[in-house]
Each structure stands twice: as C-alpha cells, then as structure tokens.
Image 1: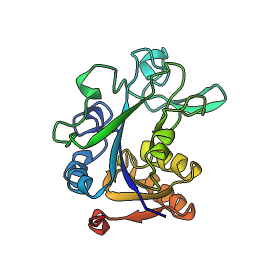
Image 2 (image 1 turned 90 degrees about the horizontal axis):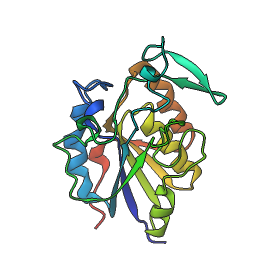
Image 3 (image 1 turned 90 degrees about the vertical axis):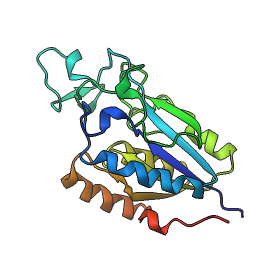
Length: 208
C-alpha cells in the first residue's frame, strides 16, 4: 500500500496569537515550525474558525455571563469564549507569517451560530461534517499529521475525529501550543492511549 501523508494546520489565526482576544501562550512560535515541515507532505490542508457575530459560544451573547464561564447547551457542557475569529475580521485571518502557498484546501468551522465546533472534521454535536474526511480519503491520504492551536482543544478534537475516521494520526508537538498547559498533560496521555504518535518536527523526513 502506498503511504500518503497529509498535514492539517489547525486554526493558525491571529485571535489565537499573542495579543489576540483568545491568546494561546507562545502560539506564534509554532509558525516557523509549520512553514518548515510543509514541503515534506503530499498534501497540506488547514482549518479556520469562522464564527458569525451571534455565535452561541460567545459570552457576549449571554447577558450576565463572562468569558470562560460554563453553561449547559443542548445537553452539552459549553465553555463561553471571548468573541473570536469573527467572519471577515483580522482576528480570523491566518498569521501573516504562515506560508499559505502550499495549502490545498481550507475547511472552515463554527459557522453554525447554534453549535460550537472544535474539530476540523465535525461540529461538537456531530451534526454537520466539514467534508475534511471525505476530501482526504478521495486524495488517498492514509496518515495525518496534525498541529496548530490550541493543542488541548481544537487540535485534540481534530485528532480524536481523525482516529475515528480511520486515519493513522500523529501530533506534531512543537508545532502546537495548548491554551492550558496543565490540561495538556492529560490530553497528551489520552492521545497516546488512542495510538496517536506524538512527535517532534525534527522526526519528519522527506517522503522521497
């Protein structure tokens, strides 16, 4: 069987960078790593948070609630976030230093105002697929390497869905940063139990 490898860049957007409204500590440090590894893959894709202003996950849309407080929503525990990655804003754009020339397709998520969406494959309630899985399978991809922001949220859920879709999956650890460093330890352990490879970008070699 021919091994075809794809890179998934998760939410490398301004609002998650230092100075952004939902800043991931040291998030900008991943950008040179992502640029360096892209040429080693058969296919490069990206996800992009793309929220309407009235998104249900925004604390501003719940009077009296503050960012990072929690509510029950449709039977699910929902974190309320600062308004972030609003469609068409600078905060929703990719980091300006990210090499986007090799990105073959961008999969936008979080567009339904009533459902949050962490994974690059499906919304949090698994009602709507982004189409990423079908795209990768149509391209003959067998192995996925995932990196981006934040490692303990959107990267984590993207990898979980990748495994569920049958892809051999790996986390590029130095190409990712968590929002909550304490939480990331348990996430890392869980991914390992799922059979996900946790690697450093230095382990990625030319496929030829």
